[in-house]
Image (cartoon, rainbow, N blue to C red; front, side):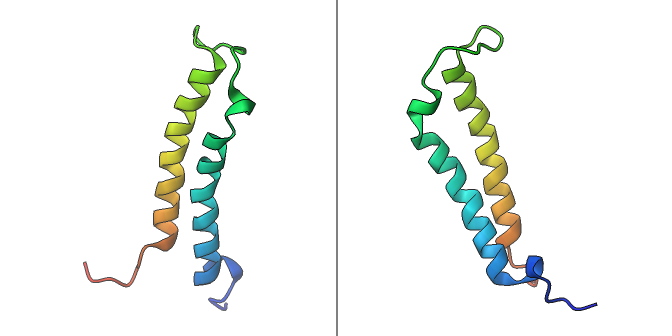
Length: 76
């Protein structure tokens, strides 16, 4: 089996990592889309819990981007 599938090429990995880094940035800039009070979760307005959710999701996106772009051939 060939090792040249699209998911294994360095260009695909860089593009995927870039998308993972841009998505949270775009979500944070779209304030009017989440500047509201309902629905509430545990008494917190949507505005607050949505931002907190994206803090966690941003960490996951950055971690995934790192895994996609790390140099696997480096000496340990």
